[in-house]
Image (cartoon, rainbow, N blue to C red):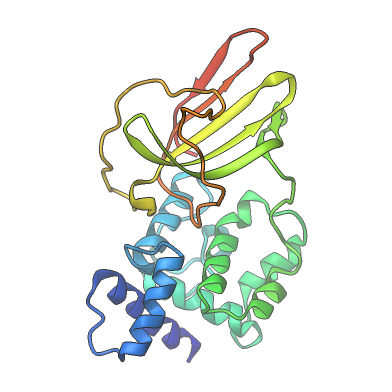
Amino acid sequence: MLHESAHNFNYLADGVASGNAGLWPAEIQAAAKQTVSRYRLAGGLTAFWSAMHGTGVEVGVAGPYGPASASPVARGFASPYRGTGIADDIAEYVANLQAPDNAGSALCKAFAASQGPLGADLALPYAKSKLLESVGLVDPARFEACMAGTAISDAIGIHLGDAISFTDGLKAGFLDQDGGHFAAVLGSGPKGYDLLLRVLSPDEQPITRGARPGRVPRRRASTRRPTASAPRLRRRCPKSGTASARAVSCRSPSTGRSCRRRGTP
């Protein structure tokens, strides 16, 4: 029942996002629209889930959809049965989180065996589980019970491995700069170092795999703190991760040297 109910929500969210919710009652559509808007699911739950899982495959913490696996959690799935597509993957997560005893949940067993700071091996299952809890498909108490104390490290700041951390003057929000609209985070570190991380975010929506955002002029971005004449960050956090990182920049005022790294977060 939980598995099939998750299918219904998935189809409803996708329909609302595409403007084609069919014969769903108006009040149900209105509630779904609020959820889609709040969690920036403009392309629908299926597209968002696909992008999230695809990223896991790219970075080596998940396996592609296909035949059932004997080690589903290690491949980013909740159970050996997840079909060959996204809809069953979502539905199996809901069933295993909401009724782990009935499902004999390999997912919850994996988190119970971890019981500590979240590691790369469970990062994708945690992100999928948290998304389903956030949109209301999984009860918060059930989510916490399945996670068994596994949580994201609470170390505040931006940390570049063990090399340097930026823990002061932290800000996050949206920034218009260099002809693009970005989600951005700003922080200050030791010895006068500042860091600005910008992530392209047109329309403040996640960019799904294969999307082609508008081109941004190939011009180096300023690494200085926002001033009266520079765009200000709004003091709120974006509600979801978005596209590929455009630039990470840092500068030391003592040496005047700067470094930049371009790539994907």
